[in-house]
Length: 268
Image 1: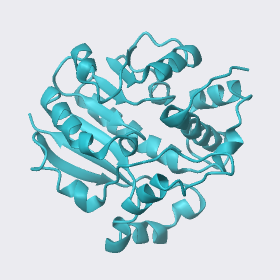
Image 2: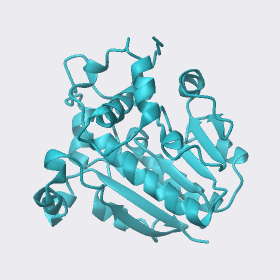
Image 3: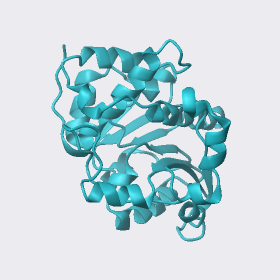
């Protein structure tokens, strides 16, 4: 059994890993994530129960991200793919180790965990930087790229995210950025320490929120951003498959209160 010591925001990588692996292990699920299952089993000594009951939310998010990357690679076969705050995501293996330039940007302790826990991946360049440290830009050629920030922006200082997006648009003209957001109410609860996954785990504070209305206003407000699209995850199991739930989630009031996935397009 492999052991890993992570804390703070990097520790959330174990939370999302558990949820993806548990979903992939279900016989009634259409989600496949072989590498997540392997790593989950290898980390059998971890107290995954501290993250509370498993949820489909992270596997549904992963499915959307997979599609966006595949769509981008259809027109840019060599990539690059830039995964900000990639953590222990297993996207590269779900996509059958594509022969593209793939850059994983994360904090040094997480890059160390990736190198120890994930399979050798010569196609991945691991860059030990905070996403906010623009030094990593010097390692990735400018031009169109598909950039993911999966489970990242909510943990960053709100005043710095727009500046980062503007710099991404400048360095990667013609590219796209996919990220997920939480609603303002949930952000406030995490800042007060009132969100508990179990009696043994409180998620880190999430100071940044974004509503669908705020996302739609980004083109024109952030230099280089020309379009913003709200992405709807595919249907899952049980209540996640309910057409009624999807209808409610897209009603005007609910759109301001639900998590969201945003795809930004950068001008040429």
